[in-house]
Image: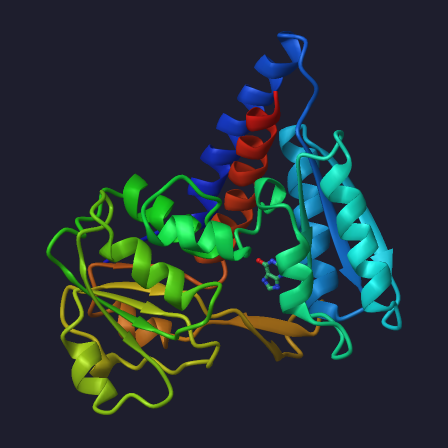
Length: 291
Ligand code: GUN
């Protein structure tokens, strides 16, 4: 079994991006600028956004954080999106989800200029991605594709089973791997809460991608010998063993499953760092397209 080391791979990507930023600056260009919009004080969102800002600093990007309280109106938030769309100093921005219930995430996502949508959530980007056209691809699927590419994992003709059909992970992942590309050209099955014979389908997987957000869901009896296992789960379970008071927990029972498979991503240190690196890749791309 070989670990798919997302932490080390993300480190290499960040180094490559930092070098490019240095070259841009030497050439008289300004650094890429990412803006994060955070509504409220959800613990998970707070830490994800803090990481995004820290990542920008590490590679030499400019970053800004715009904060709103939970009671911000939809109108106010849409005005903020409009301002960012029209600000020539902003290359890309994200509105951290989830949003409070009185705000439509769909309306906010649709309001974002697709050329600044570095999350790749706008339907224009999703549609172009699905057609194999240039697009911003959402960070987690793009990070997984990059990991597969850098570890030279063969996907052509393989049976990929994706557990989960979310708009930001499962569905785009299934589309990307079925496209006529490299990585890609896979036969893909998407499983979800209504899937029957889940275990039998998982056992057919050459590559199993678990993106359910259901801790320890994938057990060793669901995995074929020699399969590649990618664990997207990052559930924060309470723990008295860590300083933060929680432990990031994957969808896969790592110790048992790792004994059977050819490659596996750890949690933490697998998909998570690749997701973070992908936002930087998208922001650099957005900045270059404006220069
Ligand atoms: N919430 C959980 N993941 C994400 C993400 O990738 N982008 C945004 N904007 N919100 C999220």
